[in-house]
Length: 274
Image (tube, helix red, strand yellow):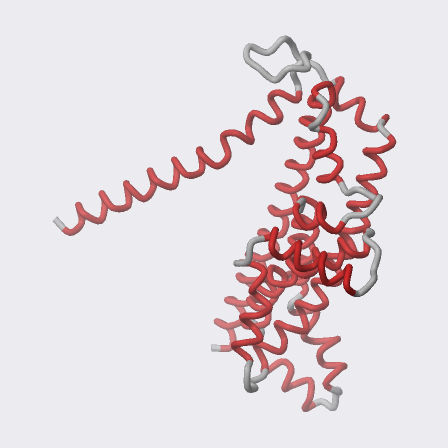
């Protein structure tokens, strides 16, 4: 009887998960479908198959400028967030000091705060400091929301790291900085790469903070929002959205593969030392 209840419970859980995934991702599936439609109106039945909307993307100067801006912002955010994440994760996992839990909670706060509140707060602070809105302000805003994600990924890497390797390096006469650079960082390299990819993906897709903090230089999400006001631009937006969706999926898949590889290596090393 107990086995039957477990079977039914697992069956309901699987059904719930399936319905949830369908509800969440079914609308996204229509994006690439309509981007191949020869008609400008996204509706069924499709008028025909065409790649025209994709071919027109490289011929749009405003789109290329927005793509370059997103690339600059994304690379800057991923590097800065990962560096700050390394320092924070190292501090949280290696040292015990007063207020450690409170500091960890403050770093993670942007994950639970509404993004529009964070964006408005950032805008007010930047204006009070007398800074002009630009790509730099977007980078600052994106770093604020990406550091928690980076820290989450890197904390797992540091927690699974065998401290005896650092102790052995210190016993051999290596300095603390040299041990961190030559022993610790190479061991958590998969987590670092995963953090870079996750932060770049989040920055690439983020709209709300970029909307409030952007100046005259638009990123891709801002460009897409501007194009949605014109019905004739919708097919190009669908094509661009499909490419962004594919890029985000690819980057997140690579990040997850690296994370799992690092976890397996940590487990194997733990088994060997045990």
